[in-house]
Image (cartoon, rainbow, N blue to C red; front, side):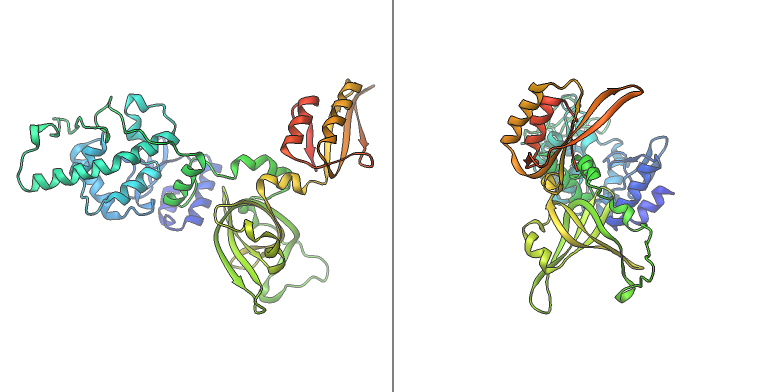
Length: 414
């Protein structure tokens, strides 16, 4: 059922991301695209899970995939790029098709069959495959042209072995040979390429490393917004167009996509964009007042934290933004209190060291201490608010310096 559903929605990346998330939640493994394992569409790989279909990869058409499947039928398992290019219809599967397959990870298994590359991370492996594509395609075109003209290959060096494999150059030959050197990608680049070719982030999501901070800030996943219950106050009515705010304040973090800049009737600038997280996306409307403060952050690929009013009608969900912050500083900027947990064993030296750190990070946020003291029935927690004497500017540096003195995990921003 999952394979059929994913196939139906293969070209709708928003729904595809939602259903892939559902598969994860239900414990249904979804396997990545693979040049030797994937079929035209999403299929069930017995005892393993649902295998990603090749036509769900952007810029890879059915004709190219059907030609690939014919090569697999003829050769058996594909073991090299060059061997693939010798039989593949390069009019249907051009360089762009190979690049998309590489960025989507479909050649990972092929490359890892080479012992020297077996344990190489994908951020290093995929750029090396990409660097081999030109040579492989050029060889394939020459090979097919000479074969069509009935000419023999020079020295016979590129003839297929009896089992359909070929020992070739650095463009990806038989097992034991390698791929050309290439500069590794960053994790961000790899995720961007996956998004470009699969329509979603596969090996992770740029927002993942901020998951803990977003939870502390009360951010909600996009998947929860469409099903949020409508809280109706006494006497409250629906607004124009059947819309009404669900909550006075909703928070979400994600990456900016599909930005449209607009102008009001008065000529003021505003914007509408999609904010995506690991489970999907939501439309965010930024009216002129908020846009004026945050225009520089509303760019494709920017990671941001948004607060605003959540609206929903029969067809869509949107957030009317009231505040937009860079996600890597949102926790520090939006915190109202810098709370420190210390044990009863903390002595004068600890507080003097903290005082010295605070003097270098002066700001306007209050500081409080939670002290755990021995008590008759266990432990007693005493809260001390010192905000009248000490104010700081929260930052990752301040947190690190304080936790170096009182211990990891002792700081919380509220």
